[in-house]
Length: 425
Image 1 (cartoon, rainbow, N blue to C red):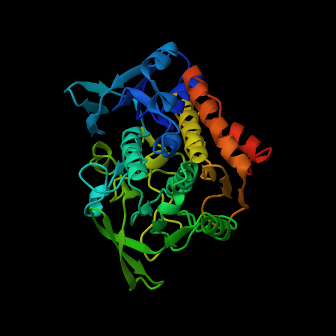
Image 2: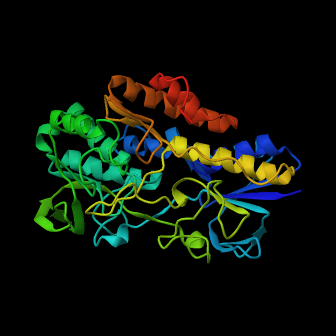
Image 3: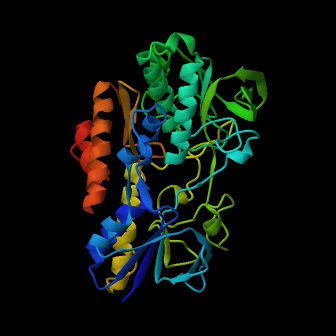
């Protein structure tokens, strides 16, 4: 009997556990370890930040749902990974041995790379976690009481831009509903070289369409923005030109700001010799397996993916839900191949970007197949149907996670919503 340990219980980790149980049967032991005792549907956090959702809407306790599938659960953080000894050291001093380790931890949020940034001791808010989103909502309520300028965007080195666009438009919609939008100028400040880059080099006409959406919502923007420091009520930004030289400096006032940070690998993962790149992201081969530690696999935000292109202000490549889902499926198939004696791993994840982004009362959907250009499919569209589709997908995904399904949820739902019958492999 093999022991498969899954480190992290987010959009990658929980499906990995269910898929592993379905594929491997009850003869193998599966354990999920997560720092928090609950699952959170992170894509809904921008809604939480304006009071459209609350914690109970998008979180649920992990243990009872895993127990139904005979999957173990430990709600603790991991202090150290002993890759040579196949052992994890937990925060309480206990250890967990494994035969296979699947890393789906997400990332460490690097607010401290910009002085004065971040929700804990800094001056900017975040929607990266449910705790951050709740704190952002408290600050949103203060904004309603005392309207003034708002800054939304992404810091240098960021790789996840979609939630910044979502929050800017959702905030716009929330303020309009309260008849306060005319008192709140919004500026979008991003490390991207242009609006709609998204860390992907653009998708279809994402530049033109998102610029049009911003103009129609009275949102100004600064691109190639290197945020240097944040003070209480003032953000200092260097706007670079295409050669990486400072074109203009800005001291932007704000009453409320939500800025996404750059990511690094979490400490226990980043500290393993031979596992990660210099930023602490797990290096994987075509089969999601680390070349130096053959029984360690990784998926999602935790893995190393090079930037799509060099930009004046550093940007990273995002890892979207469908991509994460396909990585997890490949990992489970590859572990099964080894355990059943079918041979070496041969399943590959589909590194393809598929996303629904909500804009408050409209939304945008894009498909980049593959993620890194040139592409076979390069499609971007906007409309009210995306807003409605994302609301439905939230409920669909949470329901399926509680049920313990091993279905490919992103492919099944989003491709149906978009109207495509299959992905181009």
